[in-house]
Structure formats: structure tokens, C-alpha cells
Image (tube, rainbow, N blue to C red; front, top):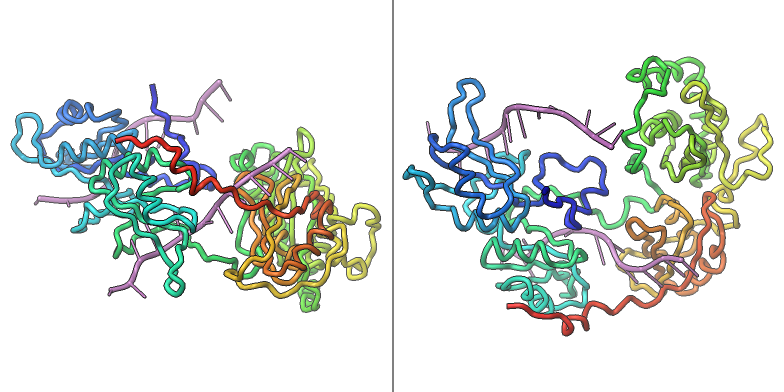
Length: 477
DNA sequence: CGACGGGACGC
DNA sequence: CGACGGGACGC
């Protein structure tokens, strides 16, 4: 009998690590009610259940005295239910008490009281992404099939006046916005827009292009779906909780002494990211593995990419220079981590002839450790908004960090962007220079990058589903 | 076979 | 008199 709370609307959050427990799901589904101290939970249940499924009613009481504070929260399963209740019950009285209720949408738990004048403004606008070709009229038409639209405002580039591919859809009522929010296709990524002047927007900071296309530094371990919650019971090292401390101790002995010698060599001009393939017990999660390899400076990525056998995983570890990668391999290969579970580490692409050599400088792998075919030197990138002359479609046989891909494709000049589609092993590469794109395609198609095969094809033109399917849609009034 | 991201409003 | 508890993962 539970409502499905994991509809497509929550897809974004689910795929991220640590969805904020303070956020109401779905958004705007919890009401904040200012009422009379004499109102009891039963009064609210009686008056509010007709609007939908109530998940929780909380009559706030003083922590110490237990006195009713005249505040109640009601959590509905759906935004539209909360919207109906808000519109219907605001200003009404319930039970035999004459105090009128003030019914507002509850702010998320972490942002405290807002008490803003323009409450209404928070309920009636959706912010969406849309094709850059869509006009205000198109969107008004489209969204009118779910609820009456007041107006649509495209976000436009200041100079060119072109659409930036975002829009605000304004409705006259919370309920209308809620209906559209729940019913519009997922590709609009609709969310309730923050009122214009508000600074409380706490979206992920979007920075267009990475600080550097070459670097994944700071990206941190990516949620490893399935490995994140790994328990430490199989870690006999200092008893679970001391897992990391155990390694710090280890690091403090001989490791750091050698490290200083290693650090002195870091000024070498060679700075190609270098990839290690690691076989690691599946009782080690990605975060633990990250911390281990992060002991050696220069770690860019550490990602569990696939199961190797039932007891082990294969991980990809990338340093921003070959020396660090070789050093990591020399120091950590064969290490029991945890005890009884040896790490197996090889430099990617060197599986053929990796004889141990005392001088790791001499077997510096350069680029062929990332890619099994020779790559040209890194080339200048095109500006992120440069016109795209050629788009490539890439298919991978497994996950690869995007920084690795960017690094590889930036070996041809005029790279504009590389991205992978969410939850898929394919994506697009954009070049401002057609010859570069074609050369990249010739060299890389069928190659292996960090042990992962890649196909590189010319991209088909974008699907044209956006403009002309409007006329097929049923309108409802 | 393997196909389309993104995110904020001129004052 | 307008802002945040309780309970607890689970086949």
C-alpha cells in the first residue's frame, strides 16, 4: 500500500552518493501548518486525509515541557496531494477551534524558517531544460496539456539572444505546477524554480567545463553502486575501525622516507596520466581503495570498474604522472590488503613485458600505458562554445573516467567536449576541427584505453523528436 | 550490437 | 508568538 516514491522524478538523486536526508521527497510534499496549540493529530488526520496519502503527521511539542507549540507538519506522498491540501486548507479552521490555519509548504529541514513575502512564488514556477531550438510558444503548448500555463520564459544568452536550453514555466496555482511537475516527461528535468531574488539555491555548482580537461583531481571516489556499503568485517587489520590508521602507521615507517626521495623527482616534464589495473578483494570498497592509493601524491582517479571473479574486483587507478603510478605499483603490488588478500597491480597496457627493473624511470610508460596505440602529443582545446565541426559517437566496453577520455581525445586539436550518457557506456566527442575528429576516429576506433575497448564512429544527427511530436500529442483540457 | 548532457531569470 | 521528533537498517 505504499506509494511508489522512487518514480523517475527521483532518478537524479538516487544516482548520487548520499542523497540529502533533509530534502523532502518528492519536493514540496510536506506542509508546514501554523495552528492552535489545542489542535491534536486526530484533528489534522480527519481534515487532511481527503487530499491524499499522508505519510506522517507531526504535531510539534516542546522538547522539555511537552507543550503543544501550535506547529504541525504533514507529509504527503505526492506533491499534488500536498498542493491540493495547501490550497484547500489555508485559511480554514478545523475541528471546533476557531483559529484559522496557515498552511504553507515546509522548507527543507536544513534551511530553517524562511518567512519570505513571496511564498506563492515558490510554488508556481517550474525550471526545466529543453532543446535550444524550442520556443516559448512550443513550451507553452507542450506544458498546457498538463495544466494551464501562465507564461514561459526562456533563459537566453545575453549577447546572441539564443536560448540556453532552459526555461521557466509559470502557472497560476501550486496545484497546476504540481500536476505539470508530476506528469511532464523526465527529459525536462523539471524542478520547482527558486524565486528570482533568492540566494538559497543549493544546486550542485555547475562550472561548465572542468578546471582542467586533463585533471580529475578532487573528483573523489565516485559512488561505486554496490560497493559503497561494504562492511569491514573481513578486515582483520586493527579491528575494522582502525583500518585507516593501520595504514597511516604503515606509511610512517619506511614508506615516507622513500617518499621524500620520490617527491624530489616530480619536476620531470613528463606529465601524462598513467593508469594502473588493480585486482582487489571485493571486501574493499572504493573509498578504502582510494585512501590507500592516495598515499602516493598524484592520484587522479580510483574506481572499481567491474567484477573480476566472485571474490575480487577490478579497479582502475590513475595518477597524473607515470612516476607516481610506477611508484604505487612497486610499493603496493602484492600488498596484503586486507591481510590474506593480495593486491595485484599492473600498469595498464604493459601486461606483455613488465619485467621488474630496478630503475622505474627507465620503464616510464608514457602514453601507451593509457592507450594501446600511439597517441600524438596533447593539443590545444577549442573554447567550450566553439562551433562543432564534427561530432563522434563513442562506445566503450566498460566504464572509464571521463578525464581519461578527455585526455585521450585532447591529443587532437580543437576538442570541444567529451561526455558519456548517464548509466551507459557510450557518449559523444565534439571537435571544432573536422580533420582532428577524423584523425582521432581513425586512430582510436578499436583501440584499448586502460584496457577498455573503444569504438569511435561519426555521430548520427540528433534525433528530431522534439519539435514535430508536439502535434501528435493529445491535448487535454 | 550502442544514440543524445546540461541547471537559474538584463534592473 | 512562524520551523524540525521518533524510530531504526534486512533477505
